[in-house]
Amino acid sequence: MILSDKTIREWIINGKLVVEPLDEVQIQPASIDLRLGNHYLKVAEHRSSTLDLINKPEYEEIVADEVVIPAHAFLLATTREFIELPDDLTAFVEGRSSIGRLGLFIQNAGWVDPGFQGEITIELYNANSLPIRLKMGVRICQLVFAKLDKPAANPYRGKYQGQRKATGSRVREDIDIR
Image (tube, rainbow, N blue to C red; front, side, top):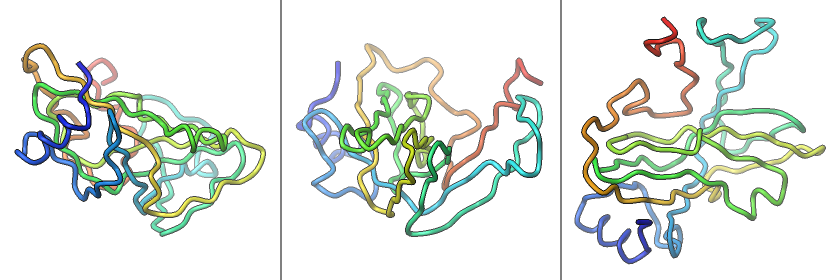
């Protein structure tokens, strides 16, 4: 079951769902819009010739109220909001249609597990042939919440729990990679 705006408000008021900070304009009929933060990571492509799943990638950190994403470029960003999902709720991260129509693809592997707490790291890809300028605070993506039939037996307590700022890949910590 996908949560409606009424249920989202109820869950926030009673503290079952945390999205902070939150303005009323962010609550949509069946989602919450999340805003762009001011922290970014860019793969330091001039420092290595390849990326792999074993070695920690090197990133260049950018802290700015405004960022320009060059044409056909990739950037990690963070949301302004910190979220806490209960163990019986999951969320899908979706790009906003108005942003996608500019050629900016927004992803975060599309899924937030029950029990997750933290800011959401989102992947931005400019598919356009022109640079795209973004400012902190713009509504960049949306969370669609789905209630589980039962609380998760093993809610998320993983390597990104509690993250603040854009967080680079930690795939090297996966048990099947080590």
